[in-house]
Image 1 (cartoon, rainbow, N blue to C red):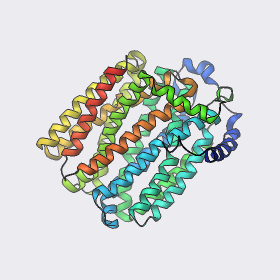
Image 2: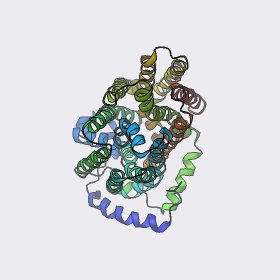
Image 3: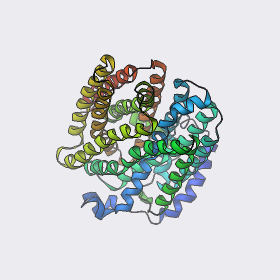
Image 4: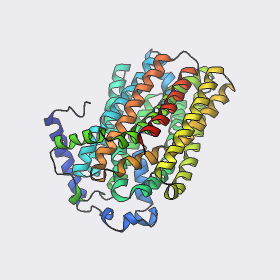
Length: 432
């Protein structure tokens, strides 16, 4: 919302910065979208391992920024003298800014190329990270988390568009799955790294580590060429580009993909917001072991993404997305039952979350590829709106988890189960 209503002077100022950066890489723009790349002969022969690794790093900004500080949330609450709901407000601030600011970066990426806006976003991310490390109260921490998120979101939204620049629909879904195999390292490593940082330092050091990640990503991006052909860049005024959002919002098929994935991502964010307190406070899991339970779910996601990358070229995105939606709804209901009855104790919750999280591997890549396939001429805008819907849903869900928290796993499990059912409903109603 804030991005859409930004004053024209602010937008133009950012445009000028981006234009200078984008033009630096514009002459090396690659036009595989118009040639043999779209026919596809294998990802590694088309772009190289470095390209995939760079995209995976850009897609990992959200995971690195959120998952690394999850083990520190109880410590932050104690250090700043606030409740669980209070510390989760910093998570909500991140999700809201990460979601809404994508609406700003998407049109910029369609007009000036992908690299320039991402580089500007990373610089903003570094400023926010330093502010988080210096914060002395929850208000300052939440504001700096919002600044951090406003810059971080440029990376994944335009990385998705970079894939669409180069690959057609089903192959793009396969590439997204392959990227997720690589970027799966981030949500596995981030909470483990955060736990280890806490073992030797305090929670503020986590944000300096995040700043270091941003610097590494910047170097990787600079080493790669621009993917958007200058001849295909949007030339219209930015207000006209923003009207493209209206076109997307009246497309039932686009909404089907976006809302299906948003419900599933909402379940993931409920898991992110709830498990530090469910595992560490309720089940008394040590903070440095929390990352192992977190990483277990990522292993499941990697396995299912690997399966998806192989099946999607034969079965298509829509069939696998429908299968994934049904599985997610089923496992979400099972998790809710375990949370209500206490069946299985800790391991009942762990098993339910593992199945739910694993089968998100059939959702993210297929929903993204399907949503962008119909709008290749404004892939950045479509990617921004889809990402925004996911993270705004996550912000609402994260707040709801904090409000309903009663010290047991039930509120988190019930919310995840309900969102799984809604994801299935949107899939069946809107995607034909």
